[in-house]
Image 1 (spheres, rainbow, N blue to C red):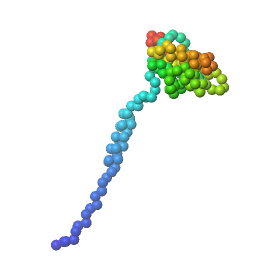
Image 2 (cartoon, rainbow, N blue to C red):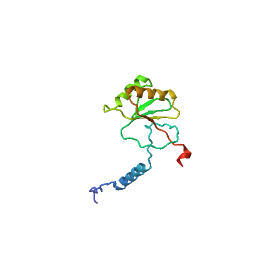
Image 3 (cartoon, rainbow, N blue to C red):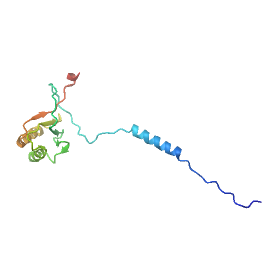
Image 4 (cartoon, one colour):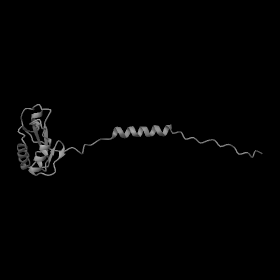
Length: 141
């Protein structure tokens, strides 16, 4: 009789199939994922007829949302006071001189917010002011 213990076979786990499955799941989730842009401001532009003008490369953009909050180059101004807006605009005006200001106001923005923005721009020395609009739906076709 053979009392000698039989040598056990070494158990091996083949990870190739597991790695393939994980890799395919990773590719599936990468392809099927949608990315939303929650950080951008959602504004509704007012409509007007007119010609589209070429925008100048060096300009300052002032966005006013529907609640009357101000954003200069995508940075929110602390409050809606005239003095605060003037200080914020003054920080973004280059020392080289006058820069065109583009006011991008929501159609539902309070009228006072736009007037305050124009007054602050005038007091800072910005005289080239334009507004962003969208064409009416029937004019686009």
